[in-house]
Amino acid sequence: MFKQKLKLWLLVLGLGMGNVCAQSQDTVVPFSTLFHQIGTHTLQSLSYNYGLNAAVGVAGTYALVHSGLDWKWHQLAQEHKALVIVGMPSVLLGGIIPLTVPAGMYIYGRNKRNYETQITGLALGQAALLGFGISSSI
Image 1 (cartoon, one colour):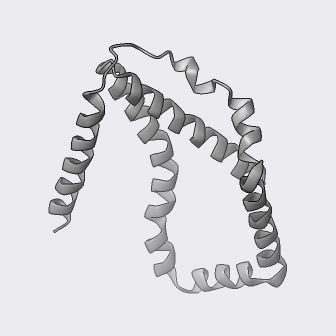
Image 2 (image 1 turned 90 degrees about the horizontal axis):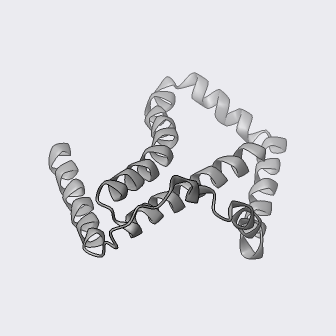
């Protein structure tokens, strides 16, 4: 069952990439484009409604810590090792996917000389960098 779902997912992903490849502009985008307007994008990610979302996230985290709910969750996880085992793949994939997907898209687009795929990979890479920076600083 898992292999069938994986094959279907790869087929759908491949078809999607094929559509993007049909729009190729036959050019190579320099890797330095990853940092194009990163300062502006960082400020924009904290403006408008996104800043409010960050503030709500900070306030929610503060409330969880001061209510002791996070400590209760920690104790529950310590008592039931199955929670740790079930959650570990999410932790590992959450660290790997934000790096591999943008890099893979950029490399794929560069090999196929597909402008849109390269730009998409670099935009995803910049979003991953900004997300890491913001989540690490909070």
